[in-house]
Figure 1 (cartoon, rainbow, N blue to C red):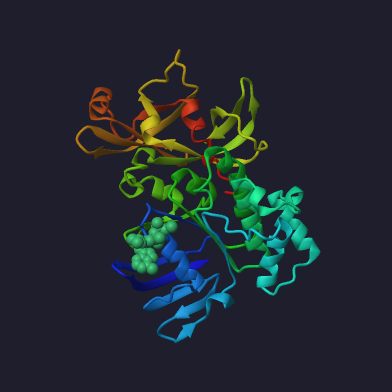
Figure 2 (cartoon, rainbow, N blue to C red):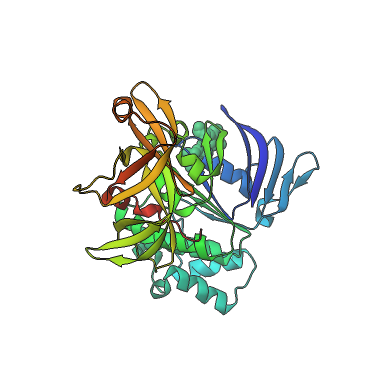
Length: 365
Ligand code: ADP
Ligand code: MG
């Protein structure tokens, strides 16, 4: 849905981006200063690159070779920033209608109602903007962008200015938007958890004005070198599982390749498919099925690969049915277990290790 190959220079900042995402939702990840917002500004037409080509949802909006340059206001881009940037002198309803007016796309009442409904902002319509909480303001900003009937929605760290509670309040709405609408979305974040939860298929990682990764989020998660120092410890696997039902003690029972898994309760119906983010360092390995241990999850598999990971660590890849699970253990442990490819092995994962990452439950897969 987003394809580009551009070069540009801003002061000292030299950038060259090439990426091609066919997914409807693309996640843009990278540390502060990597050039994420600059990439969005190029897509929106707020900056014109020195050379290159930009295609949005199949439409070419810039091509220096062919002399194509669609101006920003004709690109039909919905833009949501870190700060809501609402008009303080207008109430919520008028802010929302401004979005439609700006696009000269007088929205059908049905569309207005649908957006208001989806973001759950009906009760706020008469409120003054100044009285809104950060989370409410951000929902209104998203609504305003949607009502402009955009061809693509750019969300530039929309949660970054919110505290944890507000973030938790807004996240489900963005999640819903990314799952239920047909709209191509680019979601920017420097938080891995948000990235996995919202942009669940295609991740583009930026560093110093370059694309250092563009591909499936599962492949990205396997690359501690690309995750950056802040997230290297999160490297691991996205394990596919299906919800079987709720179990006792506040747990949900899942099925993973015919084997049971228990995680703290997920609010999804049985039959729903999820991806669980399993950190490689949270996986213990055992030669025989361990009993009398507190960990609830024991997955039987076989050793598919063993790779040295620095001086002290070894990364063991287990084949569990049709899936692969990465475990990171010390070299000493690997020697003590005398691991060899092809041999049976058990992976032990605490339920709470999955709880912490319950955000990684990904819908629609
Ligand atoms: P991110 O959104 O990933 O934090 P930005 O795209 O905002 O990063 O910025 C990337 C780099 O480009 C930064 O080093 C920033 O200082 C620089 N930059 C952004 N805009 C300009 C500009 N108009 N002139 C010069 N440098 C700029
Ligand atoms: Mg930015």
